[in-house]
Image 1 (cartoon, rainbow, N blue to C red):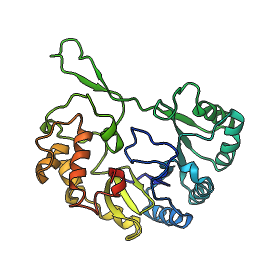
Image 2 (tube, rainbow, N blue to C red):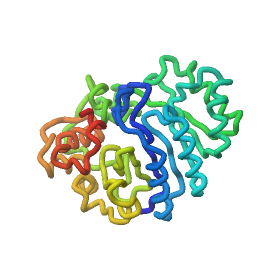
Image 3 (cartoon, rainbow, N blue to C red):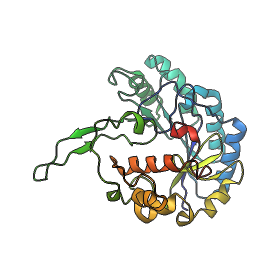
Amino acid sequence: MGLRGIHLLLTYTCNSYCDHCFLYCSPQAAGTFTIRQIRQVLDDAESVGTVEMIYFEGGEPTLFYPIMLEGMKYAREKGFKTGIVTNTYWATSEEDAEIWLRPIAELGVSYMSISNDAYHFENPAESPPVYALAAAEKLGIAAGTICIEKPVVEPAEAGTKGEPIVGGSTQLRGRAAEKLTEGLPTKPAEIFNECGDEELENPGRVHVDPFGHVHICQGIVIGNAWQKPLREIIAEYRAPEHPICGPLVKGGPAELAKEYGVCREEESISACHLCYKARLALIDRFPDHLAPRQVYGL
């Protein structure tokens, strides 16, 4: 596995309760890294030998700001580049945003991804991310926005048979699969025969959460870093042998549903939607590979 990046889900807690969140994050969501756990993962990441980038995300990682900063500092001491994913709820003015971001700039953060869309703020054009981006530019922090668009039914292109198309950038899993699917057109399960979102056979990144779960795709676990060193989990991973990734590599979500006899008669909106529904149906059968339950709304 040519692993280049590790994304630390620093916390599942978030100040928001967004309909599109595929991790089901919220103010009530449990699970936050301790600094000792962060250091353990980073020590293991160093021993992997190929990791270059450490992202701090969540949930909302800046809810635990001192721990995030200490983790970033340790990552830099190890020679890693660092990044942050945040909704910048704290940027109540450009001046305030600069105060929040100055310690991050001093730690040499490589990139900051900022959520700025209607899920987070009623008017994205006049929102905390606007102040945060201005402050980041002033401090020399490379930054950009993540804008998730709600799925909508778009008219078919000229010359087609008029089948409806689902537009928007929301991946229909987690809370999005519960909240954003009403009224969207569906198709038979068998057509979703590949996974186009993740490199399951040779992933360039994994997510590690506060419970130790190592996610190859959020909610699909390949091991637990508190039970086995991360470097061993990475070295031993073989997609065809994994009970969830194996079918997905072979024939996408359609094969996953077929192999285990779930959701085969149900129509779905997208490959991601079918995959999530199949995994939800299988979670009790594969609790070590589909976890934690809270990212499935359980």
